[in-house]
Length: 374
Image (cartoon, rainbow, N blue to C red; front, side, top):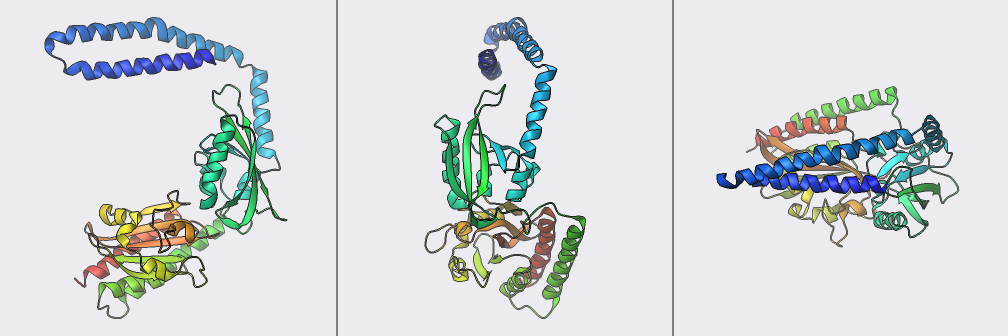
């Protein structure tokens, strides 16, 4: 392992020297022979030193991996996947490397989706910093840790997370093994939450999208609209409830004006008035959509300040327990007429790519209806 790290350092030095040689191409013509001699020297170094070194390391690795070792690794992978407890293997930044079958059922997150994403992103916002800190401590050798966290999809259910250091064979860095256990009487499962979507359910969701598109078209064509704000409010009422828990409509582009805010009737932490009082210019997501004219789809948003803060100074996304969002500019021929922002909260299924595409289509229809009133 030490030889491998030494080889990596030597190779990194070589890459840096090559970058310096590339920058030296602009030297005066009279100095080019010196640069050429240096380049030839570096090529000789690769041919005489680095390549033979690489071949020795490769040969050592091949000889050291026997058939029995490979079978042992396959056996351990199988045991990991079939463990009855929810287990995840993460790195020091909490990025998921492996998630076993029990963990996918426990969290309601597919293993293929979770791999490569931080496990902290699937937790409630208040727990993320503590989980990242404890993971880093375990990874650097400060001992095993345990803490109570909450899954973002089920914030009311406390979960015990036990972290222990693990050094996978043949790897230079320490990984962290995380065991998740429900702190309540019943362990949460994927039942009633997001999980593998059967074909029938997918067909039902597609039909619901078609109904939504029809309802939006009907609302935009029914009755005269005297102002752009009326168009936005009609569109917001179609989307509210059936498609999104929160709908926030902002008119304009360079100077944004909040037109409509519709939220859940039983929302205790955030009131519609809090969002109505917000300055849209203080919402980075809205400003970016108005400037760039591109749709933003976020599942378990990482930045708690992406939609600004409420009157108490708390991040809106955290207070409202937003688990997915769509921020869609309303554009006609490249000109932004306004911005629609949609939130889904709690255990509701996250916005899908198909739903984002349908929303993008509706946004063009809304923008056309607004442009006619100019």
